[in-house]
Image: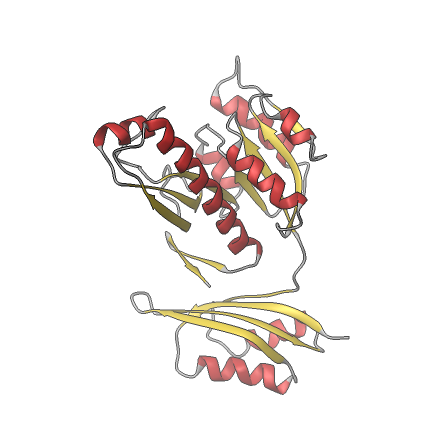
Length: 278
C-alpha cells in the first residue's frame, strides 16, 4: 500500500540540494507529486516542500534525508491527517462563525476540539455546530489568574494550533511561551496607525482608501509576529465607518481562513520573524 507524505526541509543552503534530495526519492522508487523550494539570500537558508507517494516508511525516509542535507537541518516527514485546533473568541461572531461553517461543510481540514471564550455571547452559535463551548469570565481576576484557568483547560486537550477568532485580550508572555508558533491571530491592518476600540471610525475620519486584515503567529511583540496571510480591499468617501467595519470583517474572516488553510496543509515555514509560505 502506498504512503503519501509531505516532506518539509529547512536547512543551510548548499549546492546540489534539490538533486540530492530528489535522488533519495528516486532511489526509494517514490513519486514527487509536487515540489516547491526557496532560498533566502540574506540568511543563506534553503526551504523545500515536497508531496511524495510511494511504498516507504516515514521514519526511514527521514533518516536518509537527514544524512543527505547539511547538519542542523529541520526536516519533517508528515503523513497528512486532520489537525486539531482550539478556537478562542470574545463577542464578535464573524471570524468564529466562518470557521464553524467551513468546518461543518467539510472545507476545513481540521478537527475543532472546543471553543473557549471570556464571555458567553457566542455559546448559542457554537452549540448549533455541536462543538464544546467553555466560558471562562475574567471578572474579578487579573490577567495572569485568568490565563492560568484558560491554560488549565487548554492543556486537557491534544491540539496542533490555537486560533484567536477575535479573542479580544492581550496574551501574557507566559501564555505565548507555552505554545510557540501554535497561536494564530487575526486583526485589521490599520496597526500601528489606528489603535483602540474603534479603529474603523478613526480610519474613516482619516479618509483611508484601503482596508485590510493580517493573520499571524502570536509572539511577545503585540501584533508583530510572523505574518501568514494578508489582504486588502478598496473603500471610498461614500462609505460610513460602519460600512467600512462590515467590509473589514469580511476581509478578516477570509484572511483567517486562508491562513488556516496554509498551516493545516503544512505550507508555512517560520523564518525569524517572517514566514515562507508555499
